[in-house]
Amino acid sequence: MHNCLVALLIVLFPFLAVAETPEMKGLAIIQEADKRDLGWIDSKAELRMVLKNKQGQESERTIRINTLEVEGDGDKSLSVFDAPRDIKGTAFLSYTHSVVPDDQWLYLPALKRIKRIASANKSGPFVGSEFAYEDIASQEVDKYTYKWLRDELFDRRDCFVIEAYPVYKNSGYTKQVVWLDKEIYRAVRIDYYDRKNAKLKTLITSEWRQYLEKYWRPGLMEMTNHQTGKSTKLMWNNYQFRTGLTDRDFDRNTLKRAR
Image 1 (tube, rainbow, N blue to C red):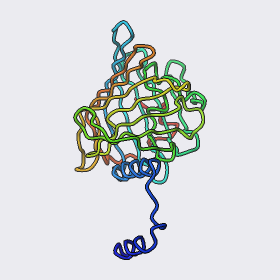
Image 2 (image 1 turned 120 degrees about the vertical axis):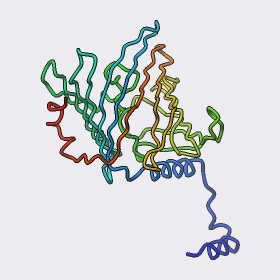
Image 3 (image 1 turned 135 degrees about the horizontal axis):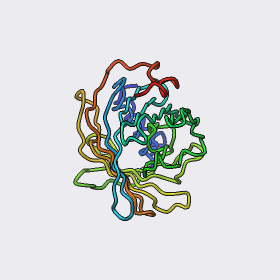
Image 4 (image 1 turned 90 degrees about the vertical axis):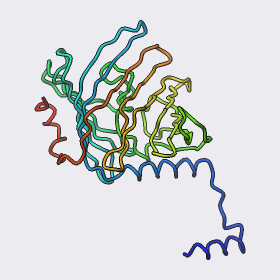
């Protein structure tokens, strides 16, 4: 239908015009963000993880992460730990889904055993960090319902502020409040609220770079736990895209072969 005809119908029959609700606006913004990040196919990256306890003591881990974009479903990812020595060879495989529970497995080389992560444990910490298993899975649109709250500046960026409510079972959160940059349509801050609806954690992302003239990725992600005083930094390097990864690189057998 032509735009002029639509406008004429609204003038003649104003009851046809439906006001955009905060829920409709929030969903539309998230759908646009998702649409802008389609088509990268696969990626590889290197990651340095720095864990800090309440006393300020730090420990580091280095990880390689491969990711495969899956049409019509969530992404697949394989994370392999290279250091420190006591966890070298530990590998984590994740199949993210929209509404049904994600499939996740952890390979522990000391035990030479693959451990499936139960859906009820997705709120647990990922290898002792302040990131939960559900935080590191790809964030599919259908996993949440949304509500636009307001527009405001964060870190000199013009942002949409949107609440996201998980609809999948066993989430550790009642809601997330997301600051989404209006220019790049990526989350620059997320506040996480626990099952008692108290603020639990805040994630700040920065050092954003664009790849393939389209896809934005952060160089730094910092998760701070307000209730424990602990924090975890993720420093990303050497992003590569469209490297030729396939489903065969993400089956369960790759966990034991990952080195």
